[in-house]
Amino acid sequence: MRLSSYLIPVAAFAIAAVLSVFAAILSADMIEDASQRGVQSELAREGMTWADVHAEGLQVFLTGIAPTEAERFKAISAAGRIVDAARVIDNMQIEATAGIAPPRFSVEILRNDAGIQLIGLIPSGTDRDRILKDLRRLDGSPKVTDFLETAAYDMPEGWQSALTFALSALEDLPRSKISLEAGRVSIIAMSDSAEDRRKIEQRLRRKAPPTLDLVLDISAPRPVITPFTLRFLIDEDGARFDACSADTVETRDRILAAARAAGLEGDTTCTIGLGVPTPRWADAVETALSGLSRLGGGTVTFSDADITLVAHIGTDQDLFDRVVGEMETSLPEVFALHSTLPTPVEEDGEAPEFTATLSPEGLLQMRGRLPNDLTRTMTESYAASRFGSAGIHMAARLDEKLPATWSLRVMAGLDALSYLSNGVLTVTGEEVAVIGKTGDPRAGDEISRLLADKLDKTDHFSIDVAYLEELDPIAQLPTPEECVAKVKAVLDAQKITFEPGSGTLDAAAEPVIDEIAEILRGCEEITLRLEIQGHTDSQGREEMNQALSQTRAQSVLNALHDRRILTSGFTAVGYGETTPIADNETEEGREANRRIEFVLIRPEDTASQEADAAAETAEDTTEGAQETAPQETDPDDQN
Image (cartoon, rainbow, N blue to C red):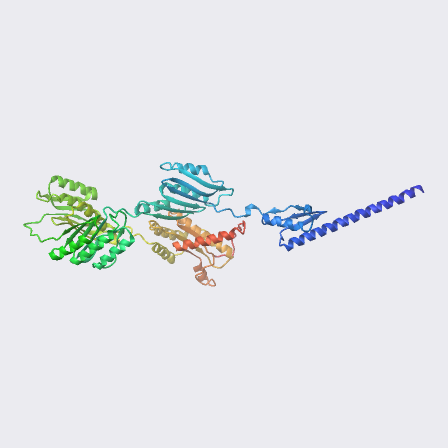
């Protein structure tokens, strides 16, 4: 009996305990469910569907990957509006830094007489100390100022090759600005002359890696013209310039307008350069050309501030005196006018003469008269230094009665003759005459300048120099359009072919690549930027065709590089099936669409491409890292 009385209370307490535990668990589950549903609803209402909610007792756990730190904080605040903030446990993560596009790494290198400045952002893996060490080893041990910043990102592809090339290019460019980024180098620099500019451009293009996009803007300063020379003549053949110099575009236009008013016809050139003796050069030239036109013919020669006017034989004396007087009154003060009205001279016996004939092969024959043995030896030695000793033939005889300036006139004439491909120099008592052909469009100016400088002001000279384009090595260079047209003609006759469904060139493509390489080798003297385009038909998947066309275009570029073609200005681009030229429903059309094309890139095209690339880069920064799909071979792909 006593045992029963104990069991009943114990059982009652046990049952009560069980019921209490059950009630507590039920209450906790209800609180968890209510908290979880409430927070989840609030987050959904705020548009934060990326966040997950899990409740354990009174605690509410937030998990998920927040796009930004601000979104993470916003989710915690939203949960705190439903439950006590102390109950919210933050287990959220921020989107991985690796998914954010790296910054644009670039460097500006400025070099001038004051030293070298480096400005920009570089990857932390770049050997900064080595850069500074290499720059300090340049000629002259320049002062290097380092304004570079670093960022802890991997080096982008093409960064190191662009940096290495930029540093090597700086050795040839004492006055320059070099902008570099991954895979691209842009150079703005100055050279001492047009010839130096051409050599520097060739040297840099040869140095550039084949995958580097190289942009060159190398300028040559205006030439220094010494003496500042202009020579205008009017004869039975009409009016023309033997030499024309101007200091500005406006001055050039005024001089050409005055020449046309004096009878000049057709196009002509006027060299713009430095060294003008006075800002009133155009005023003096306009006055002189107008006066020569009023005389009806003759020559007017400017050598700095000295003006020599020679009228035609037979010009009326009163007209000559009046025109010369008006010119002397109108000319700016700095100029000095020497005027001559030749009179007919009757020669007794044979007139003295010296001639030098330069053949197209470079042989020089000299005949006529020289004053003495010493002058003959000096003339022969001087000619050998200008034309080479192998082709010199001297057959001049001695004449002690020649004028004292005869030797000087012969030497100056030989100097002038050296500007020609072939021609004749004639020295007489009246003048020095140079006649011939040249491939240098500036030869006439240079000869006029030389003779005006070396001859006495009373010495007359005449120049009849014909410029022939076929003798001009620069004019014989093909244009970029001509180079591309020749390549297109080759591709029209025979296609570049590949192994089926592959980017590997087949054996039949080798002679075609060889022929194209030979054409491009002849175009290396000019700036040539090409896009090698790969195209396919529409068979197979679009993404596979795109990848295949890119691989094929790159294979052609690599093949040209292997043949030692300068490919720094070339890019390979695959267009896949996007630009058909024939119907893809027929076998003939598909065959035509499977092709390689060479397209000339013009400056405006480059600017457009850079703008498009900038827009694409801005879009890419919001997409994060993308995984590269494995390349497969579609069994049905016949591209």
